[in-house]
Length: 163
Image (tube, rainbow, N blue to C red; front, side):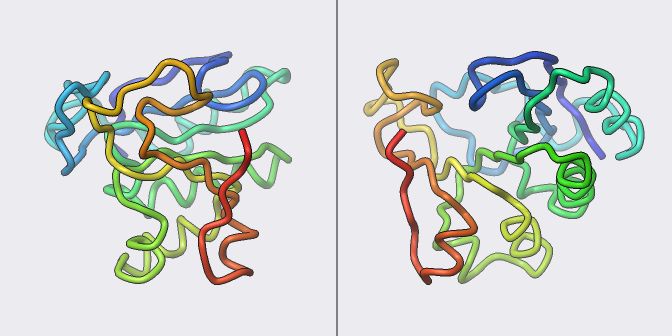
């Protein structure tokens, strides 16, 4: 998998101490993106899912995995494998994507749909510079939603978490 980088013990990419994995490659190119160097799919470094999961599992205090980027849905197979490893170790899994929940559910590839179904929470939608905010937890712009994925898939529509 192509990796832009990762952060142990992140407290800004979801609740608790998180392993934030920033994948390389993003088709959205949102103006004002905080990781513009992650856009180029040819950038970053190659790592196996096993190497990344080894980093994920190093810290016994980790509460969860956050897949960010880039866009994890640009590498759905690898991110799915990593998400499954996280769940097998009782970690929750969050992801950020410039695509919306509805787009991924209805128009995503089979691999993207499989990744979506493995998530606990999706922060969806592109970063919009004109809607930038520092006041909402876990989001960079007001259009982005914090979605409870299992509840949303069961309900047939986006269930937005109050946080």
